[in-house]
Amino acid sequence: MQFQAEAKCIDDPEQLAAIYLSKYFGNQRIEYPINPFQMLKDEGVLFSLMDFKKLEGVYIPASGDDDIPIVGINANRPITRQRFTAAHELCHHFRDADKEISCPISGKKNAIESYAERFAAALLMPINELRNQVRRRQKNGRRYITYDDVLEIADYFGVSFEACLFRIAYRVHAIDGNTESTALRKRAAKYQPEKERKKRHFSYAKLYVGLIDCYREQLSFEPSDFARNLFQTNYIYNDSRMEGLDVTIEQAAEIVTDLRLNMQNSEYCTEENEVYMSIAGHHDMYQDIFAVPVKDSLSVYDMFPLNKKLFSHYPYPDYGGSTRQNNTLVIGAKFETVDYNDIFTELSKIDAEIRDFYNRRTEMPMSEYIKHVARIHHWITVVHPFPEGNGRTSRAFMNVQLVRAGMVPIYIKVEDKREYIKALERADKEKDYEELYEIVFKLILRSYIDLNKSI
Ligand SMILES: [Zn+2]
Image (spheres, rainbow, N blue to C red):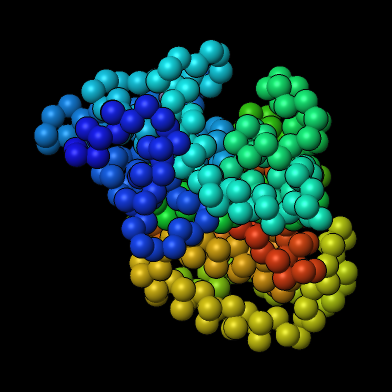
């Protein structure tokens, strides 16, 4: 309360951010990127990711002494913008806590809004540290830095390229050329910062860690009919399309139902209906994953019944659930799989790690557990234990690992496929998992929004 009274009297957002930072960190060294989600939490503000269309965020003050203030953040915006919005809403909490405020994405900003925007920039990119970062890159006494430099600095502070560029242009005056705002925005777009980031393999994983670890309670999950339906339509449809099966659930519904009811006696249980047999199997797999009560144990060998389910509607259902018996190269695989003689040795190593993480899951940050799930997923794709259906089985098994730990399961849309395969390849070739982590974090947040939409 005292700080809020003080904040109202400070006309300069730069000054307010500086005072808050020194109050928040005290004598401790500031660690970058600063985590504004943690700051909201520490100030007793509950934040929530929302499916907004036209708003960046909202601030809803506490209605009385036994209530707490709530902040909504647009879940559809990039993580850098979500962080910026968290910092922006923190400003409203300090200065405007007597009223509800909606913060629009675009349009002319009023005085309250532009104050909060400037506060957010100053909070996430403290001016002294920004000057340090710029100075380090002013080579040979040159005043101006390059866009590549700005990209690195934006990554260091966990902000968007544009936000960083503007602050450096106006506060440090280290950007050459026309820095009038429209021109600068155009120049930023032309540089294509996201493409440049990808080229350099910069990852937002660490920014998602900051969000997810402050959002653990909200990301908890228990199977419900709604979740089951969502996954049995969206997920299976997407995962089948990932495998190149071009069919919609609506088209398949009748045939799949017949297969599920009549099993091998169904008239569709023939080779030319493989697409439908696979979808029916997939359906059963998810029935299992979302079964209640959720089991409180986990093993890599839980993958075997999943793989068996996947093929349970095929003419020879015993085909599923057994391991690969040769080293025939997998068509389309971008990396080598282990020798089939080593499958069980590898699986036992994986199993030890899975059990260890599962037993310690409540003691570690949520992001740690999720990273482990991503690494195991990559490992299983390399072991490639089954003759067929490895992709679908290992993706389903990721969800077993998440659901058994009480966490939101994920589904990969066919549009995400390229990025997902590239991330797996990167993990494989460079032992660099950051891109894979980023993808899995993003997917968890997306499922969370989808799962909470209609409730
Ligand atoms: Zn606002």
